[in-house]
Length: 114
Length: 112
Image (cartoon, rainbow over all chains, first blue to last red):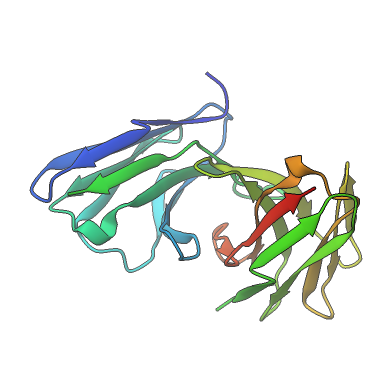
């Protein structure tokens, strides 16, 4: 595997379900991010982990819970979601402290909440 | 807080003609990025601009940065159908833990 991978690619869940999104980066980076992309809205940063420590939490509802067990893996745990949470969830990674801080994105998980 | 504005939000291009997408930002941004997104796909990094006057070119795309005017432009030369996509600019400040602030995106459709 190369770059940033995300699983599953598509997910349909009911409002009472619990599920998790997984992200893995194979770039040797030390920072990882979760973004939400809804129709007709700009990309929204949800969480930032740098050196496995959460450094940003952008007022995200508690029904979204991130976990970063090591610098290569990032999870987003979902529970009791609402229909408005349906969106494309993108994971990204970068090298914190580098000159460019360029972020590389995974393919995304298309989430539908019914 | 850094705010990023793109315009236009939609651009219908004719093949063979030249066009420009503008990206204005509200406060000092140490880095400026351009991404491309095809429908249903992820974001592909196009350019990273790190200093005033920076200009980068790849094929028919050229990006530039004017930090004094707080403006970046993405110029498309002789548009072709393959360039149809949504283009995002994003800014970042050094004290933001690598947080990208995205513009709304410019949807580009290239027609014959």
